[in-house]
Length: 84
Image 1 (cartoon, rainbow, N blue to C red):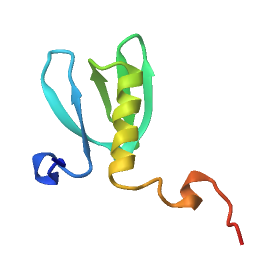
Image 2 (image 1 turned 90 degrees about the horizontal axis):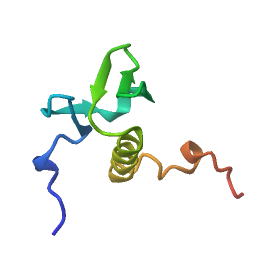
Image 3 (image 1 turned 135 degrees about the vertical axis):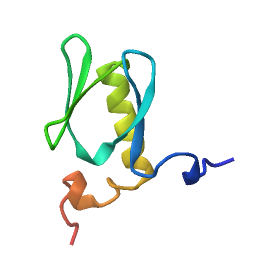
């Protein structure tokens, strides 16, 4: 059975704070994901969030989000040239 979009916000990914509490983060505004060694996510507005997940786990969540919303389905965004 497919996942209902009502079960979670459409443009959000779920991240866990170091204290174990989950929160939703708008994946469209993520600028960087770094390990210091804690995973630190910086948004385009400069806000920073420290996550329990590894950098690779956050990358995977972002990638899954992009697939869900078909943001990479446009060949121009993927960097492909027209085949005309």
